Length: 103
Image 1 (tube, one colour):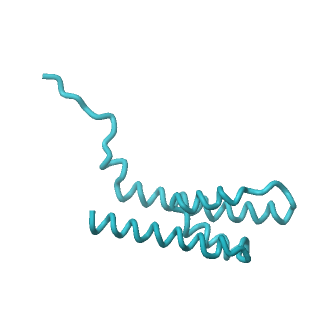
Image 2 (tube, rainbow, N blue to C red):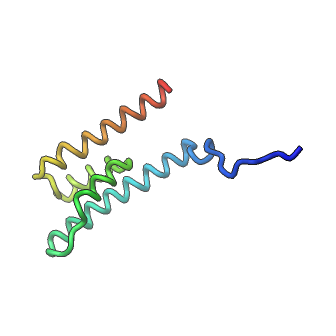
Image 3 (cartoon, one colour):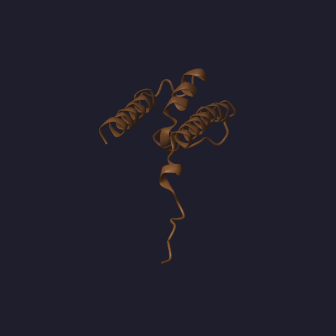
């Protein structure tokens, strides 16, 4: 009998270690992208689209984008960001808690 092996082991791919590495990288990237957009704004250069900033936040980079927003005082006057970034981040935390404890 021929035994088939699956090319992906989802338990290894989605291990706690890999998830934590992903969250660290995406949050560092979110922090960096807020710094970069601030520098571009100061120089009057082409800016990073606001949609991109929200996508990075939605992909798990909320802590980094929020930290970058307040560290560099960037987008802090825009209500969409002041409310939107924390709202997305809180929803993701609630979803993670639900998935961990009730799944």
